[in-house]
Length: 121
Length: 121
DNA sequence: AGTGATTTTGATAATCATTCTCATGAGTGC
DNA sequence: GCACTCATGAGAATGATTATCAAAATCACT
Ligand SMILES: [Zn+2]
Ligand SMILES: [Zn+2]
Ligand SMILES: [Zn+2]
Ligand SMILES: [Zn+2]
Image (tube, rainbow over all chains, first blue to last red; front, side, top):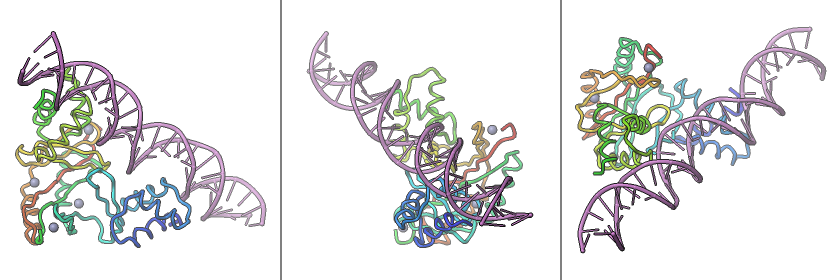
């Protein structure tokens, strides 16, 4: 793990929540460190594929990243206040893979998101 | 509702599943009808704000739209050629409801879509 | 340290969905 | 027909993401 790459993840760690790639880029620059957008995106891409970073999309389509040590999972999102709950869904993972295989599909990904109103809302 | 607008929704209805704005645009053009991307996006935007269509985002950030009142079901979509397979997922339905209840969420909806490459692609 | 191979970087250009602009067209009522 | 309003759509602009590629850093081995 190079110096450039770890500063990307360090920025995420310090933030403790979701950041966009552009935010991470500017944050690193403000610290006086050298970096480029390409490196930020490359690092986030690899981190996401290794499940050490969690990705979700804003309404406008921009991707947000968050350090995530719990591996692949899904979310239950309150559509009113934005509260999110992380969900373990191994049953769904297995189901998704078997459905894909039985239909001859490869390189299968899936979107599984739950929306609703939390107790407060 | 103008002629242009209804052809956008008609395209969605005929598809019965998720389509991107670009797919809708090209589909209408292939039918020989006149339309513009701006109109397609405007129509989808308004329809989404009125809850006439559901919106979700692929991994690459592209938005997909579906008519709301079609019977509830899920899809396996080839990200290259657009081939879609309808999926039975009663197990997922039960799972989603139980997860939502155990977290105290109400009025829960869910998005479950699979993406991959079909045999030809 | 020196040398050559391999990997990483980052400025820049390219891509692509989406949005903006605005002149034109279609419709509506008088 | 005529004025008015609103929808349309071609093209430009936006903005995030990705691709290029030469320069820089790192590595492997002497
Ligand atoms: Zn809430
Ligand atoms: Zn999953
Ligand atoms: Zn295909
Ligand atoms: Zn379902």
